[in-house]
Each structure stands twice: as structure tokens, then as C-alpha cells.
Length: 230
Image (tube, helix red, strand yellow):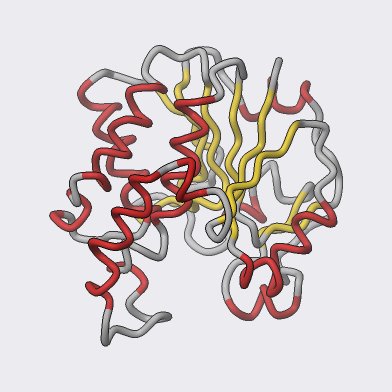
């Protein structure tokens, strides 16, 4: 099984926390980094256009409390991951992991095959019930006949500013929205490795002892989650 891991950061975030990702990454799979200050706009010009069109929408809002309506802040990951899905077709499985992650125990190809992948499922996600999913970890079956279409539909949501017709504009909401559309319209099956509960679902999942997603200001500052089970 040929597996690719993808993440994205910018120079400021690298200094704040993504350097821990780079230093500790120990999974036996190729890693592709999209740098928002280096290669992302060149690789995905639509991302730059989206940012330029919409960066003023968030003026006057609070960075912490109003994140659900900040489409620009979270667009970089969407464009990076969908670019990978549309470009690196030689892979069997592509995993997207947030840059505020710290790695401890490597996973194996067998772990992916038995715990994170099912042949007839398009993608793997960490569901939290009625709450939007935890999108610090997402993965796609590149051999599924709807994966390419899913990536195009995600890009369309941003290329045509359609996310601003929705109740929330952060990426977790949009990933879920399009996934659910595919489940309804095309009867696509997806693998939910979450427990349906809120909070730090990744720490409670099968991935919880392998790497730590230090999401949120306090965890990032500490460099570790209190919920980490490793």
C-alpha cells in the first residue's frame, strides 16, 4: 500500500508549533508539506484568489470566538489537501494531519489497513456525533471512484465562494457538509473512527497513543495534550 501524509503550515506557525511536527514525524510514509508562505499559492493559484477576495470578510471579528465564520483562516488546508488528492494519484491512501501534531509511536502499513481503511469507504474521519467532526485527521482511499469528485466539489465550495451560503465557514463544517452530500446523493460509505462524543476525540480514538494533536492555545503552548494516552 502506497501511503502519503500531507500537512500545511506557514513560517509563523512553524516557529510557534509546527517545528515539533517536523522534528518528531516518524511514520514510515512519505510526507508532503504545503507551506503557505512558500509553495502553496504557486501550486494552487485558486487559494490565493480566494484569500484576496475574502480576507476582508473577517475584519472586526474576534480570532478566537468567531472562528466558525473565518473561511480564509481554514482555506489553506482545504486547498492543500484537495491539491494532493487531485495530483498524487499514484498513492493508494492519503492522510492529512494538522501541523500542531506531535508524533510518538509510529504506525505501520498493517495498522492503516486494519484500523483506518476499508476498501469500499471513500474517506476516514473522526466523528463527534451532532457536533462537527475533528478534522485534524482526515484520510482518503485514492482507489475509490468518488474521491476525485469529492476533492473537486470541496474546491468548488471555495472557488465559487459557496461556503458563505452556509451556516458556518470553517473547514471542519465544510468537509462534513460535502461528505454528507456524497453519502446522500451517491450512497458513498465512509469510515468513522470517532466515538461520537465532543471534545478531544482524536485522543480517545485508535490514533490516541500514536500521536498527540495539540489543538487549541493551551495545548499548543504546552506542547502536549492532557488527554494524550501515549
